[in-house]
Image (cartoon, rainbow, N blue to C red; front, side, top):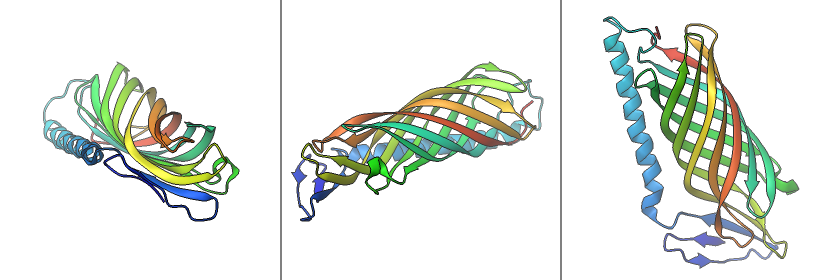
Length: 233
């Protein structure tokens, strides 16, 4: 086995079959907990917004600024640039929730899972699990459509394969800080349902051919169907 301990120490244990398994942690145990704490705070914020929307619905509401919650699921396509190897395509799903702060600012929580069933023709799977949250900005907001930009922070657990310089196959996963930035638009098909096409740059981490953790750029596109809880005037 190849283990990255919180202290940064590295241990090797071959299996005698010309391959190794790798498990990589962040160097500080505390950094693993921070994304989850951030996600919990954002969930509390979304719940608070939902309660606020119910309370305010009884009084007069200005057009376009009614606070609501929206949640849904979608399909995603990820193009990953794996360290030392190159591009790999993954397909997956996104589950997300959004809440309004005002007409131009909101929050978003998102969990995504993407997978390749044959990473680099090895017969091994590779996948990325992301869990992030952050602010959403609406420079344009109309009754039927909106344009938005977002910045999300959190973590990503990436599992897959890589190869050392001598060709030895290395398998394992890395659970590390991740972030994403992107833009998209909302098209409302009914008072309760809307489509959300989105493109974002996703930054995760994986190990390279030297079995060292390295940043990994990804491009993710998605199309989600969202349901509106509450009423947007």
